[in-house]
Image 1 (cartoon, rainbow over the protein chains, first blue to last red):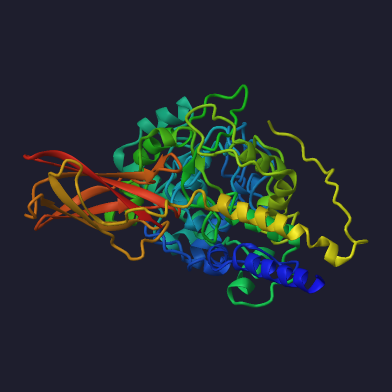
Image 2: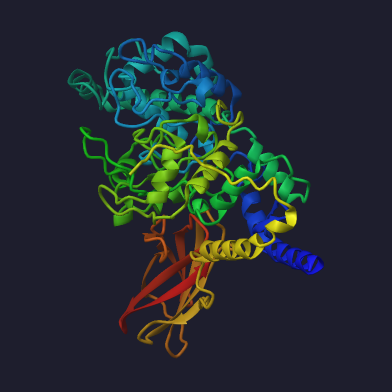
Length: 410
Length: 160
């Protein structure tokens, strides 16, 4: 009797080992699971792709200049706001608060920077199409830096002329420029911009674009770092012993992540994002203006003078396929926001585009419940995960940070 | 809707029992894991999906062929494809107007891009740029062909 039971047990365990299961207390992984998990490892990340729209992206002098500009609070309307005021280097270049605050309060959550050189679209709604054009947006936003183009051109000429000219060539004459002028921003700045002739505007725009390109050259150097999950994925792919690399609960969470949870539909590839936009039924924030996400942003990026096809881009039309063939319309773009990378996610509360969800556990519960969207249609379907599964998934997500739960990777 | 995390998660203590007494759990575990596997397969493409990339249009006016630019079709990379169109009797169809659309039937979203014909190559062949797939799974591509003979369309399946 005892022998028969043992044989049955071994047979049953063998069957389990063949699929996704547990063999004698150890998790086993099917070839399909192993392949999918390996595709999520940082080891699978291709080399940093060139940005054809930024000819200075890989110039170390440009990166050093960009780094200095990134931390310079003089690039603001009140002398107090730098990029680093919201993008804290020791907190994954984000600020841990629901809505970013510069000179005023924005209506979006600060995004981290690591790996954005791989992004096709920038910002939650993708209203910019390169790191350098993204960097220009906050500089002139009245609730962020509140600076303007001629102010920035004058500031560069006064403080960064040597490095700037080393990279980009001679600066234009700036002393005769108005102190504050821009096609965006205050009425005074707009009026001053109107008074400039076309050549002056072009010169100022060129300096402004180059400031973005220098900042982007710095941001390109900010890359995600390997995590405990990557060590596990690499060991699994190589057929090495994975014991102790993930706890049983974390392994269970990973199995849900690549299986029943279908998380890899959108959170795929080594950066755990498909770089696209999805409506996941994230609740609207009471008291804030209506936010329709991607459906509004497509016209903005198409009209952006600093986009891939614009006069300040170094790319030819062949390099701008993403913009040329951008999906501009469709119900699925309503309240759709960019899939964020999950690298470092545990250290990046609160979550979603306006910081609507306070904790990672609540995010998992949101996906499990799949509530109706405030506008458009959610792509989520309820998952009916139990409490233990929710906790396992959360435990797995914590392995995607350099330092586990603290997740303080930069 | 967003409940706070419950930490009360009592776990039964089996430590005092003999290992053999746990054997009754095996069939239960087997069923549970089997059920889980089925659940994880629910969103996979139907097993009998017709993956032919040459198809007659719905009303039989044309025959369309999709030629992916890269094989296997990559996820996350924008790519250029060739579409070949013939009349029902196999003659290459030039000067046709083509429209390409697509999406994921199980996810309720379309292609992440708007592909367009950028060049008629002659011999019934057309270059389509802007093809992109942002996730693996079952995708459909609908090719709409318009010419003097009329408008007709065919839907192709892809399993990425």
